[in-house]
Length: 137
Image (cartoon, rainbow, N blue to C red; front, side):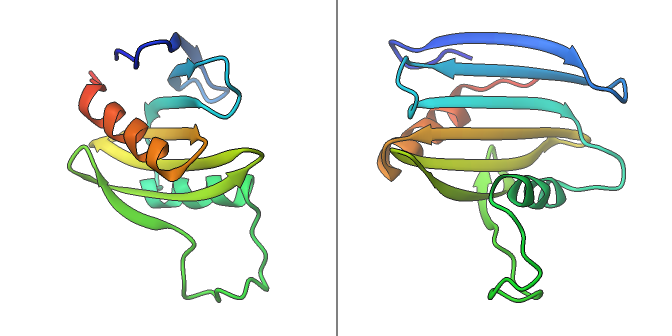
């Protein structure tokens, strides 16, 4: 995937403890509040992209059983990404917004994407750029 002008890209593939292969694409600009991380791996058995988004939410934001949202409401948003359902959430970071999205791009393939930018407009532009330029094979 080509990144916007001025971005640096690194791609690595590694093995998880369970033997699964993960491809990680990192895009940086030198600004700690403008970056992206994309992880592509096999979707773990007996789970969904929505489950993975909830796991990420609990890990990154925290999950409290006494959450005022109640047990029947989800903290996730559902959007379209690459013509598929993407489950995600946003959180504030020091000088920007972090958007996390999980989507099953093809049967059995999970994409987890973290995009950080100073404002919602730049987050949306980055997500759109990724959607138009990412090729998972």
